[in-house]
Image 1 (cartoon, rainbow, N blue to C red):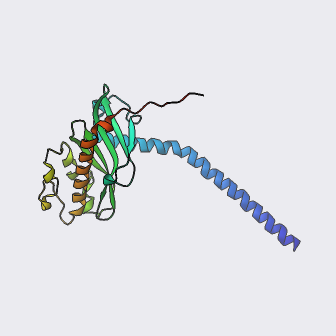
Image 2 (image 1 turned 90 degrees about the horizontal axis):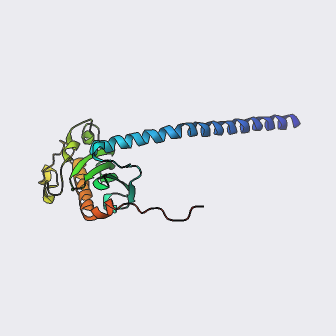
Image 3 (image 1 turned 90 degrees about the vertical axis):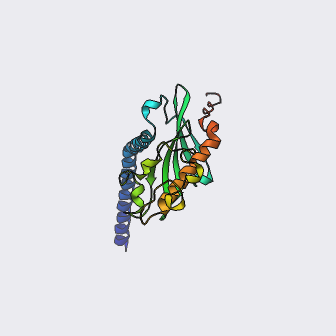
Length: 213
């Protein structure tokens, strides 16, 4: 009986050692890769932003000139608003993620709006739409998403911000109308939000207050 207890204790001790070593290895791996993951995420973000607003148009640090907003009409998540400026003058805002209710789930967008209210562009960040149909909203699958660049609430008129099937100016896809219809509507809502909140969106962030210790 004593031998069995000793064997069980030894086995448990070994398992405990392996468990601690395994946890330490996972923690070490995480620490070693966290910085790289953050760098990769930053690179992807900036790549998407620069597709909507050229870096030549701004001279500020976008990653430091950012605010967070909550607007249920644009999605359930907090939306980060990156403000592009040149010589402290407003150039554009880039809002992400804006949500559109797609056919198979939420479509997440990044929307760039220039200071004059025209679109720098729209890109799809994530979606679950049907391959071969709704996925044509992806930049690498069709040119459709590029059609938003330069549009505004005056071009076309608000009543024309619909897919052609609904009497608007935007193309739909054969066999997949829900996806483009939803993105058109979400983009229009984003433009409307910008138009009514332009001053607040470009308002410089308040400096930090408090006493250094």
